[in-house]
Structure formats: C-alpha cells, structure tokens
Length: 257
Image (cartoon, rainbow, N blue to C red; front, side, top):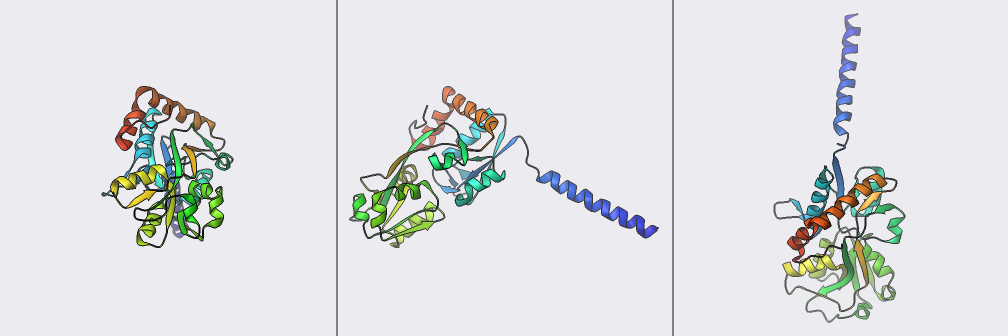
C-alpha cells in the first residue's frame, strides 16, 4: 500500500511538472512574436553589442506600443518565413519583407510602408556598369528572396554563368569582396547602408532590376490582427512617429503615407 501511494505521488508530481512547463511555453497574448532576418541592415540586424536594432525594429516596437502590446523579435531562417508564420511560431514577418503576388497567396499584407528596388552591386573598381555586363559572370543573392524573383524575371538571367545562393546578404557581400563573386543582387535600401559604412568598396550598376515595396506579413485568416496593426501604423503616420524613426535611420522621411 505504501508503495502504491508513493507511485501515485510520483506520477502526480510528473503531471504537475509537465503541466507547468506547458503553461510556461504558452505564448503571452500580449506579445507579438516577430520573425526577422537578423543580418538585414539597416532594417533589422545585430549591432556591436549583439543587440537587435534597425528601422523595422524601432518601427515594430512603436506599433506594438500603439496596440498595447510588446514586440518580441525572433531571428528565423528566411527561407522558411512563411512556414514559421503559418505554423503560429511567429505572429508577423517584419523585416524588409517585399510584397509580391506570390506571397499574397500565402500571407496577408499591411499597406506598403517603404519603397525599395532590387539592384546589382559590384566592387567599386569593377568594369561592370550595366546589366548586360553580367553575361558570363558569377552572381550571388539571398536564397528565396525578392532578389531571386527579380533576377528570374529579367532576361539577363539566362546569360549569367552561375547564380550562387546565400543564407543572407552579409555572406554574399563577403564573397563579392573576396573575389568569389562578380556581383550581388540586393535590396537598394540594404546596399545603400553598407555603402555608407564601407565607403569606396562598392558601386551599384546604372540599371535596377525591379521596383518593389515593403509590407508586414500576417497569417492568413487573422484579419483581426491585420486591422489592429494597420490602425497602429496609420496612427504612427499621423502623429509623426513613423517620420521620426525614418529620419533616425535614413536621414530623411521615406515612409509611405
């Protein structure tokens, strides 16, 4: 009998621990878990103290505050961003996320908040100056990004010798600097940031591949969250919060109104 009581108490303790762990693992309803690429400067990246910073980081924090919530940033593999969203592991995709027709089939989007373009960058002393100069060259880009979509849509793609895909833009730019690549397809906003940080290292070809716009991705079916977020973004436009954040990161007001 004593042994039976001991076993019952042990089983009860195990269930209590499991229940406690399950409860602690539950996401706080007052927290927005935001999926980001933490190597996507100046939108979202790690500074010298390994803190996650950037335009989208400040923008998301301000929007969450307007919604009476707090933002929690979750670095993810950018190739699986839509899967992370649909699974519920993150609530939003918010880090220079380009609005495309293909992505609209997978996620809900806010109204666009920034204009961007896909451009081709090479080293400052390179002889490349226009898209046709990429014929027979080795070009890099971030895997499953809008850079890949833009290149696929351009006739020059068929003339390029090799297209090498990378997990992030930082890796692609490092291979460009080391001479393993001739050029990189990248977001204009991103390369403009690196060109200010590494003056004289890069140049952008005269022709861009594709204009685009950034938006925030919300899980399909969650119109309630989408509407609350859009309301917060609209309020930030009206009260000047969005403009202040843009001035901080870009030196000018780039936010679409």
